[in-house]
Length: 288
Image (cartoon, rainbow, N blue to C red; front, top):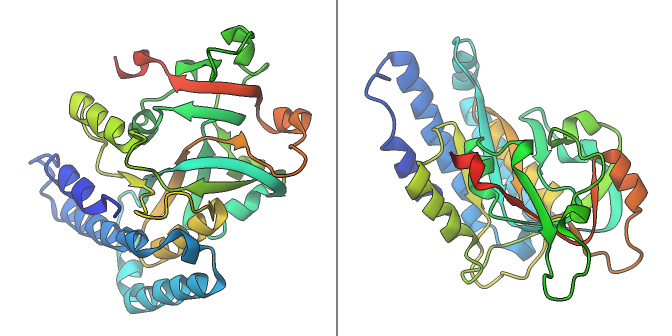
């Protein structure tokens, strides 16, 4: 089950007492509704989410909700306050087998942008809290070898050459071809969600407009789902609210292609690409 409800309660407890204006209360009410709609993901099994029937079910569900609230959404959008939220999708990930246009990751206007933090072909660890809070900056990236025992390549060689001083924006990539990204649920024994919770307890929870969705599907930890399908489902859920979201992906982008690997030179030109067995983590400086 996704911990949307727990996260919502955590955020509610941190709303400042000064935010008592009717405008702020309206916005908080809309955020509550958005949290409830995002909870639909706890009912989505990995194997079903990638099927045509499940896509149609999500479409009908979102469109029905949208039809019921169109008038209210129109009224809310006339108000002069922010309609933007940041959603971090936390999952295990990989790139594999074929390329798609970057625009396929932005299917509807409800998704403003999709930001990737890992270079292509890279494994990541411990980035979710920094991504969700917005504290992670490009200067906080630390690269090393994933396999310390057998790797003979110095850590600095695992850092991509000409690494951009910004994240990989799929909106800016536009019609460029990028790898197909697949995502896998988090596991109880991987410690990813527990590490996020420990950092939240130590440094404070994300702000109210920053939502984290850990991809947790008990019993289906090894089922893969196209990331593009997850984004489509999210964009449809957002249709029934007045909010638009920037989607942040916290996950690995190692090359798991079953056939030929992706063209490393092309991936380097698109954004950045690491050599094999590269690992990116977050410097502790991000939280100081």
